[in-house]
Length: 301
Image (cartoon, rainbow, N blue to C red; front, side):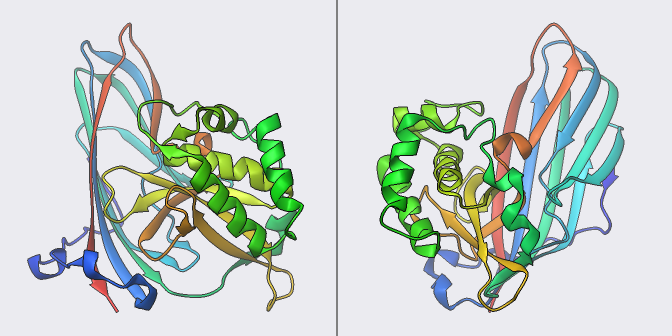
């Protein structure tokens, strides 16, 4: 089954082979990227009553990012519905009565990013409790409170504090796959002092919320990484636009600001709001998920 507004035209070999590793991203004003993803589920026995959700296509517009085109190919005939959630994310829901052994999703998305500063949103987000209150995966612990309190004692609730929290998390945590899972919360991740990008993001979110900084979890892609990536957006009152909030994106895994090579798919309170793939079905056995992803630079200016 093919789903999408238009058929996506893959890039020509000359643009697909763009040598992005030599790019000085601080000088780039516009980038166009092609995201190719495959998600395949294999089941040892037939499953029934599958209700599946995908959050792998970005909204049409998100800050300085614009979705140019997208295509989703599903290997089995299914009932597909798209909707927008409370954060403006694009949600794709599928229903199938039966899957004999395998279902595969192939998605191609083209997005454009512009070096537009600042990224402004409506000021109501500054007081939205969803961005200020602890979520299930960002509940405070004594260690998180101590860390956040020590940083707020030396900095105001401004960009300087956000920078300090980002660097603190980057230095306090070590990147290691396999020691945490999607249900690991910020407190456990900090106690372990290890984890993957979502753990770094959850620790930073927890500390920002303890400090009173509205913030949100970002699910997306970082050019050059083989799997999905996660980072944090913090919202501050806009200095140049009354009634607006300015959005600042930070990548605590790498200890830096998120740049044009970070491509946003969805935002929420934490990972639980924006898993790329999730679902339920009737069966005595679970399935095995295999994923492939490639992000290609197709144009830079």
